[in-house]
Length: 631
Image (tube, rainbow, N blue to C red):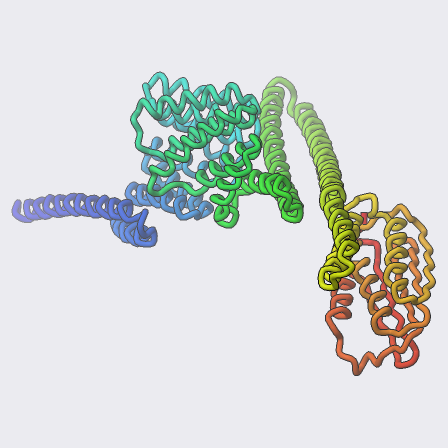
């Protein structure tokens, strides 16, 4: 009778032991797979994912939420390394929910913190704050000082990115206080670095240098061999010195940062690029073109390898100033335009930050109002309280809409003002280049003309020298004419229709006059002060010049009629020659005619060329002044 129950009890004990033993074995296998994934992650991250999937299979077979959550938490680190931030957020949130089921609040808090880091890396600061405050609530309940110090600093960093410096400093100093209480030197160094960054963005460079140096001193005391971190500390100090005008100190700390990066085998490209760019900038400001040029050449790979707009916003203006100093004005203007485009991108990013900041403040204000309304509902009758609540909500909605509308109007006006300012800066550069060309190169060419004329006169008896002197004089006259055209085109005062038409009349006189071809020039301008953009003006003038040159070279014309007509938003140019003409269907289109058609297309214009043998040629160009780059 007792034999059967005893056998059943023994079987149960054996199965329990077997199950426990299997769980221990599976736990060891999962730990081993996680370690393998970590070891190989820097060499082949795809292999890390393979080991993690094997660990997931084991956890699923055991139906272990705890191990599965642990695997997901480890996986989030590799997703961050791999740049898969959206997937990282989903993975961390799933891990947090599983840790919650297993009643592991510390691991849940860490998972929310990692989700916040991923969201902040995508500039989703409102979402990041939601996750960080969830982590903060769990950490406060646990009274875990280490976790509190980390999450306070993360929140401070988010507020710094939102340019909410009051909250940024408050949470960063809270983190620093905890790190001091727990003697966490490494954490203190991170706090000093964050506080230094906040003061730097506030443009309080003296305070910024103070905290950057405190962080750097701790790193040295710790004897860390993380040269990337030491390089970043030195580069931060150098940037603050640069902004405060202390160029020698900036160069000293940038060179120190460069030495740290050279000691680091896997140096960080972004930091290295910023350091050598800053060195080039500092030497250029000190007037040492040779050293500035050396570092500028060093950072040539950075322009394509680093896509961070904040770095490019420093590099492009530097290149523009360098090329201006070295006399390469064409490249200088090119990089000024590139810098302007990057500034627009940064402005758009700043606008997004402002909208997020407004949204966060609005939610906090709304929550406070809702709490106040709930309190009033407990003190008064339900109907009156409900009516008050609705009225207040309508008021909040109206005020919020007014604030949003005002912000949009202000930001739009700022963008317009910035574009106007940029246009004025470009006009100033154009005037400077035109002046330099006229004064320096123009006077040099004039000297060449005088010397060549004197040389010819002094060597009347030597035909070879006389012919060479005449060739030099002829070529210098041609170059002088070209320089005059460039100077004219660079002068912003010549952007108006009146100035353009006057130049066209002069150009026609110069071209046709040399061949003794009579011409008539008629104009009808409804708004002579209306301006064309430099590109539209250039294309329009090049079509005109090509057409008049063709009439002089090929038409054998007895007369050329030119008519320019500006009616409201339409610009019409008609050039008619009374010459031999040509058959448009049989004559192949040369480069000149092909380029004329291309330039007309660039202006969104219409070009017609009508010609018949013996009847001359009519060229008609129509350009809409609406949306054609007209100022």
